[in-house]
Length: 298
Image (cartoon, rainbow, N blue to C red):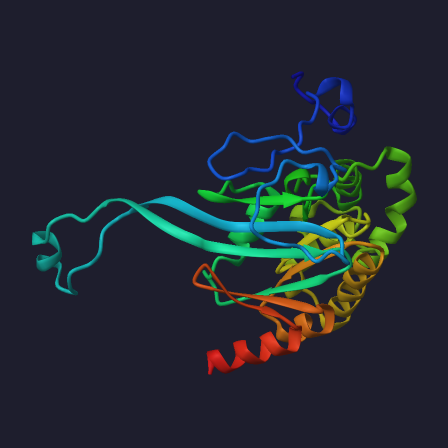
């Protein structure tokens, strides 16, 4: 690949390798590429789950297990330094079972909240659905490529917000003309009219998050995953973001919203998955599951 020397070189497709979509993993098998519009019924699939015949399934998660191999530095044996020095070392590789046998079917036009305590496995589950984290066993099937909200990997902090809109739009599959047509709406949604010409490294975390959401939400996604993106910004921005998520859902999209805000979940979602220590504790109507989760947390 030719080294890029300026902004125009970054956008010149002749200077870059052809983008290859990330694969969706199935258990311990080799990754298989999935096209953008592969019908779920046409995908090779073996599952004990039985989707409802009257609704169109878009994501099937079947007995999904995700395990991590992490380095353990050892446990302290006491507060006294001498006792720690004399204790045998317990360092080594530790296996973390982050997701444990999760199964569910997501349907078209659903807005699904995903709740649970920190470290419960919510984000790991979402990364597996997108194809970023391969499972130890189990399968994930999708009717089209799921999109994890955010184009952070495509954005460059030293470039202005305006130029990052171009980069983010191209990363989402828009051409230059389409990005130019969407630019004003993205800037207005992010509320960055006065700062859009400044480098992104000068933005606060809230400003950066608003711009990333505005870019990613400018596209109509069939399957969209929003992981804590609504935790930033003021109440007005959260309401507009929630309205945009509902709009995506109403236009034949399916949205997963990971959040600790039960109000956002209840305002946006019609179904909730409660993940507890890697296990799907409850799956059902939003209010019913949220009430059970609140009672458990008391």
